[in-house]
Image (cartoon, rainbow over all chains, first blue to last red; front, side, top):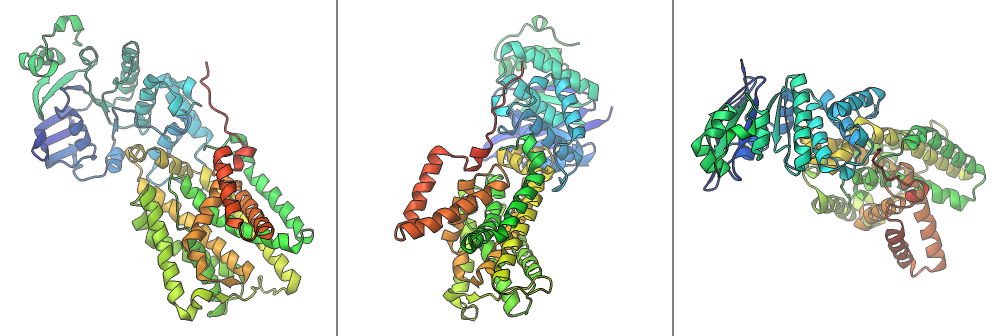
Length: 258
Length: 320
């Protein structure tokens, strides 16, 4: 296995607050990595740093062997590392189809044409295929602002995947989604991600979700990684249970992935 | 603000038909109305520049900068360089507007909302201040622009006015078709996406600033073209072309017409010119008040402008 994402000594401070302390992370191709941690543990800071949104105070970030330190988010996206957000970041006054068309044209290159139309049969067909894959076809011609939360999250993730990236970072994919919808959403996302062979890292608060989908789990606590390994061992770790989860967890009841 | 599909596909022919109808009017319309329309089409071009920036979520309170540059370039090229061909003069005006925008765009695309609006205003007022102080350019009086020739043909009297009217119809139609294409193009639609969510555009791999920059330059080009056309049609230019109330007028017309379609700024400009002409004629001391009342009524009853009378966006419904 070769590393797709690697950080060395990644540190970020906000004044006296240490949001990330000497993070050495290596993620291999094809891994499904979960990230847990209480609020302020540095999970989102980590995602923000590796995607170029937030410059680290020190450290190195390698994507696919190349340093991406100091690059703009758009440049990192073009290299094949994309992300979704805790709150779906879409174009609310455009329809779901138009959102997808914009993503498709962005995936084609950094300079969209000012003469050729955006809306072409080819792009529509691609968009329709993506909608079918994500099960959001019924919202195709609806303004995003009128789409229910769960489907909006799916559209958000679908748009990130349009460029056929190699790595996807999800910041709380199921936050704001009802309990009934959570598993369906994750099933859909995971099926697509597996089909396309995308490496995935996602931040999640819901231990049931984490236990079911990840192949590896990292627990963050005040800017540091206190546990990293198979979900079973991390969730069973006494320190993780005390500092991250906050109570004793019956890992057998969660049905942890092998 | 997205276009209904059936309108998008038929816009080209609709523009062509409208242009032919107006062109036919050359020999029918009373001279005062033809002159009013000539200036309205020129103004519509500037307003179109305001409108395409509104699609990006930016309100330019200084579009008169480019309007004035276009006008002065036509005047100067005609007077100092002896260029009399209308097409060459308009090309120069457009080019000058674009050059100016390439310089200002680097600064302006860093700013949004009120900061963008105020900076555009500031730049136009710098030009105004400079022109007022330049006695070589006639300071506050400006100067007259000689009647142009058209590819070697120099019409006189009524033919001159008719030729300018036809020119304005042709230029407005050509720009309307071009800008319509631009608005539905990939870049044109990404502009709306930038208005909606810059962060997402960035994370899709595009530079929101580069998108706004292109849009700003296009807007400047057509606004300068409108200024050049105005100089040719009115035969006179003065620094008031750059003053902030002129920019305000363009924003007024943009709101009056609406931002839903390339036709809207031209409809807005024609209606505005007609209202102002009659307001000045009927109540010369209160014409600004009349316009104020019109704007108030419009915001209350037609917030999306006159264009919303013609096309209403159907609210999308969830298919079940």
